[in-house]
Image 1 (cartoon, rainbow, N blue to C red):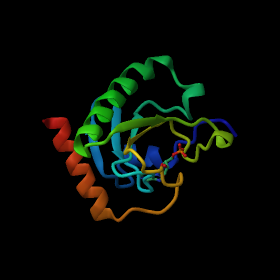
Image 2: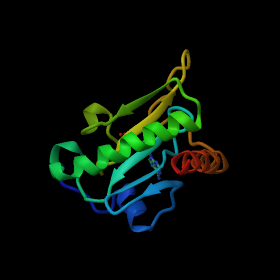
Image 3: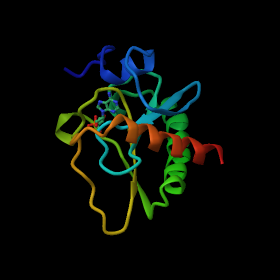
Image 4: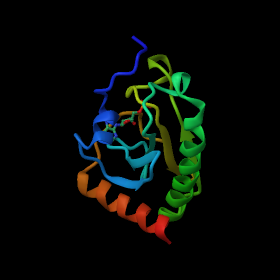
Length: 141
Ligand code: AMP
């Protein structure tokens, strides 16, 4: 099945039917903490326009999406004093996609620290909240 499912988890978060630790929102894009982070500060950047992934997205989605991805990448680098930032994006199960609403992973990287597994352990809500607060502060500063 390669159609868009309006009941996917991120669609529910966008509608406010499920909670998230949001760090940024504008007319086109939302960013919130990944609940199973591959590294400290792992954030997801999600366009509001529905598409299953990059393959079926309206190209008009990409400008706002990547402008916000850049903003979040700079903010997480500053917030966690990261050495680098990985940007990842998966399309279809064979690539590792598990949630079928287009999104970009923004993951702070630290020299010598390996990534944790994709969709591994759930992070504690209080840790996600504290990390979200640090990112929001970096976005404001
Ligand atoms: P992907 O495998 O690229 O589709 O990534 C989906 C990401 O969403 C994974 O990194 C999951 O840890 C993350 N995730 C799943 N459910 C939630 C949720 N309710 N809130 C935030 N992140 C989630």
